[in-house]
Length: 374
Image (cartoon, rainbow, N blue to C red; front, side, top):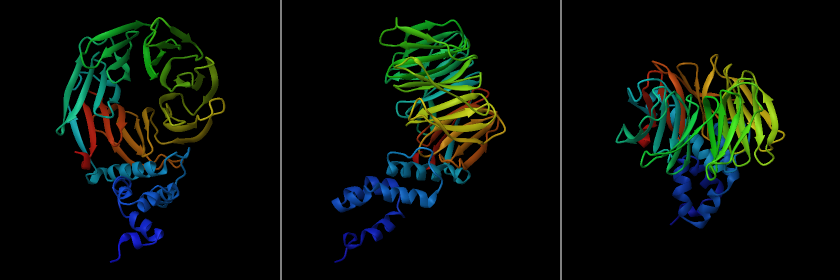
C-alpha cells in the first residue's frame, strides 16, 4: 500500500506548504527520519516565506523555520484583526492616571505596568480576564517611566522622583533604592547590569551584584529618552537627536547615528536595533558590528511621533501619536499588516509573541489576544 513516504521530496514539501508551520515543525518532523531531514532544510522554509512575503529582511534570521512560523502566526492574527483574528480584553481603571511603562515578564505570563499614579502593578491574564497579581504599595513618589526584569524574581523601576528601585516580585518587598541627580526616564538591563538614562543627559550603570560599583557616562547633550542593551553595548536615544552605541568593554562611544527626528523608542536584539522617532519614522540599524552600524531602513510610517517599538521575527508593533496602534511587516518594505485607531487614546504598547498590551490614556489596560489562544 502506497504512503506519504513513497512520494518524492518535491511533492511532500508541496503538501507541507498547505499545513501550519507549527504542525509541520512539531508533529510531522517526529514521524520519520526522512520527514525530519526534509523539514530541517532551511532553504525550503526560506522559499516558503518569500513566496508569501517577498520583502527582504534587514538582517537575515539565523533560523528560517522559526522565522516562517512567527511570520505566519502574526499575519494570521493581525491581518484578520477586524475579522476576529484577535480578541480584546479590557480592564478599566487599572490605574487612576496614564501609564507610561509596560513590560511583559515570565515569558509573557504576566505584564507589569507603571503609571502616573506612582503605582507599580503586575497583571495576569486568567480565564479571559485580567487579574491583579501583585501590587507594590507606595512604589514611587512621582511618575514611573520605565520597568525592567532582572531575573525571575526581581524587577527594577525608574521614576521621575530620581530613583531606581529593586523589587521582589513574589513578596512585593522593596529590596533596594538608588537615588540619582536627575529624573530617571529610561532603563535597560543585561546580565544584572542596569543602565539608567536621566533628565540630566547622563547614563548611569550599576552592577546589581556589587551595588557600590556605579559608573556614570555623559556623551549626550540632552535628556536620554530611551535605552536598550546587551552584554556588549548600550544603545541610547536622546533628545539631542542622536542614537549612540556605547561599547561596554572599552567604556567609550563606538558610534553615533543621527536619524530623521530624535529617537523616542528602541527595540534591540539579534544584532539589530529598531528605533522610532519624533517625526514618525521607524529605522533599523544593523548593529552586528558595533563600530560600523548601518542604517538599513528609515521609513516614515506616521505623521505623529512614535511612542514605542517592539520588534520580532513575526512583526513590528508601533504605538504612534495619541491613538494609533500599527503592526508592520518586519522587512525593508515595512508594509502595514494592520492599523488601528484606539478610542480614548494610548500612551504605550508592548508585545510578547502575538499578545499585545496597550496602556490607555486614562489608566485602562487593553489586551489583544490571538483568538486561538483564548
